[in-house]
Amino acid sequence: MRHALVTWQGEMVRTTGLAAASIAEYARDATAFVVWLERGGFTGTPAEVTAQDVRDYRDALLAAGRAPTTINRALVSLGLFLAAAGRIADNPVRKVDRLDVVERPPQALARTDWNAVRRAAAARATRDHGLALALVCLMRFAGPRVGEVAALALPDVRLTARRGLLVIRRGKGLKHREVPLVLEAREPLQDYLEHRRALTDRRTRTAAAWDETPPTWAAWPDGMLFLGQRGPLGERGIRKIVAALGQAAKLDVPLSPHDLRHTFATALLDPAAYDLARPALPITTVQELLGHAAITTTALYTRPSQADLARLMGDRADAP
View 1 (cartoon, rainbow, N blue to C red):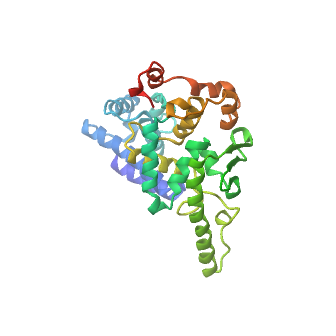
View 2 (view 1 turned 135 degrees about the vertical axis):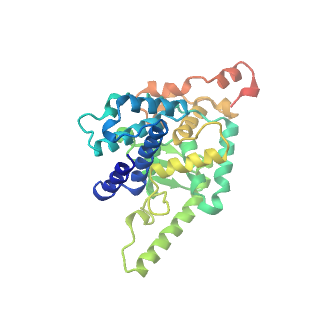
View 3 (view 1 turned 60 degrees about the vertical axis):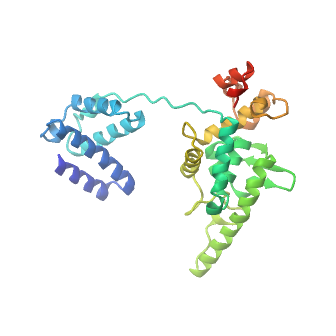
């Protein structure tokens, strides 16, 4: 089995074109399975692995507290390994059911949790020049989807001393919408834009030194808005930044970009939950700001949590 593993990993490197990290992940999953088999006394070859072996391994991972997504990924890796070892027509992994994955629904952040996230982002400003703070404040106070944030170009954010506007040009369903930017979003964005312009200057100097044309995504004033170390910040990079801020803020559950969007909507529909002295917006207005095609989707944000019910019944200790 160990020889088959080494052979398979070498074949992936030579023939698949997969990233090194992906190959290493597949190999780790398959190696863990082989180690588990050997600990149980298995001394056979890949041809002798049965569906019951795979099923027992799946159940062992579940009993060890592994997440369903992790277990399902391991099953994919085992299927690839056994297929490479000759088990194409009778691959035992095909006979083993995957685990159902129930994703955690988005949660609106409590006021104290949002403040902790904002402080965590502000603490990074000396290192990332305000990138994380601008990102989370934009998502919290304007509610764009993570894919919409990744697609933003500099002209999509229009800022003046007293007003701001976020333009979503290709939202879900290719819908165009515009969202006003409140002060809490404008100030971090303005600070970040100073650094963003400096990035353009730096890229231009570097390109000139190598007698190259600067990349269009780094241009000013019409390049991409959020830049990472190697280029435009994509969805994966945004999710990674947001998750890291959630950890730094010591939240009870992982933080996702959609949680920030959910918080934006909840604050509009139930401002009292955030000690905001203004009336709730009509649900049709919130629908337009979120870019929802159906109002039934927006209505999901009006479903009260246990903390909401406690607050409405007069228990301020449990208020968001």
